[in-house]
Image (cartoon, rainbow, N blue to C red; front, side, top):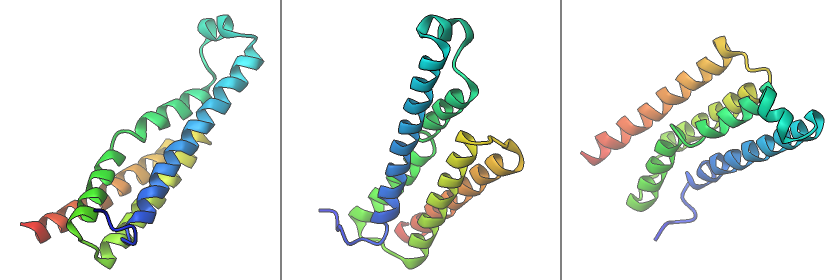
Length: 137
């Protein structure tokens, strides 16, 4: 049974919530484009606008590296690992992912903002993984 009072449960659900927010952003961008472009025929001809493509790409990103975050969180929930430092790292990871999504779905400034937040979030996740491995093995 998962402890619903586990300190990492909130960052876990905030990251899931981010995925839904990006999904809603994508829906808004696509529906807006559909209305502005005059239907599907024009979109097929010209493609979706950049803001819709970026939202779509970011939604795909939410199902790549964050899946490892979910797996680590679930492992911590099931094994009872609940260090303060892991919780802090989880919040840092989620904060970086939120920042990444804002940049990706907004101005899309790749260097240094989007790329930097991606690399930092991956490093935070790697640190979490190593800490958990050191504890388990």
